Image 1 (cartoon, one colour):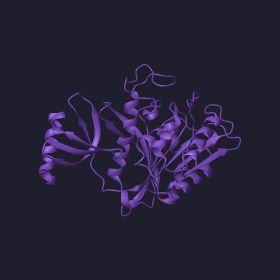
Image 2 (cartoon, one colour):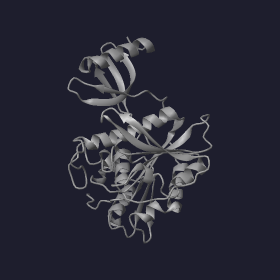
Image 3 (cartoon, one colour):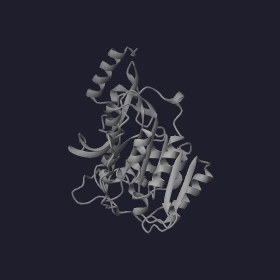
Image 4 (tube, helix red, strand yellow):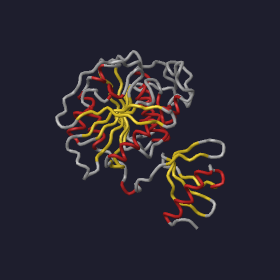
Length: 326
């Protein structure tokens, strides 16, 4: 299945008065991109760092940005009421597609002249860079990390949900614009999904979203399909606090099994002799091999000799400090 209608979202939304809580505009230096990248974050006023907070990661649509999507009506109001932290990554720029269109930049409404050739890769990486920053700065409940997005961001939500199903406690793709097959659902069939479509959406036709919902039903997934009667593509999502509240209700009732969670590990970018990179944490080092866990939870046993000299030195020091070498 292939959806060819793509959403261009450029909305001017009002500032929101949030009492003690506030939306903050932040940035960090993205080393791989060699530039500063913005993101937006909301911390509820009740957060004191003593208790872990649930986290919502929200992805913007094509032509939009994190500062707009985090201001969709109801997003921070519900976060304030329920104690959620919300973060909105840029995905490198307004058209990165969060990796859902591949590592490059070629294709309809994808990269433009001047964009890096690895735009898709950088867009996906930015999401996890921002998540790492938030998880280091605040106490996040690892069993309650949720991903949602609109249009391009909805497609990114389904893509990142299928690629990293062990990370999320639930997904909420809204009018998802996708360029990949629904078979990806088989990789996340145990992941709860709240999926939304506008009945009269001219950019992401309702029929395409219905097909995704039917596939979820066939897979017997934990899902809820919400079709907004008379709904369009933009305002029905940006100005629909009732629908946003329902998404939070859905998230509130779902979390990952705590018995399957492990203590957070420090992620590092490892590079092999061919220059291929993988972001992972170290589980153990034994003789000439290292066991690492990729950020999506998949485990690999690698000969240390295939890694860079810098990585080999890091693993040696890691083994000495953790006392887990043989």
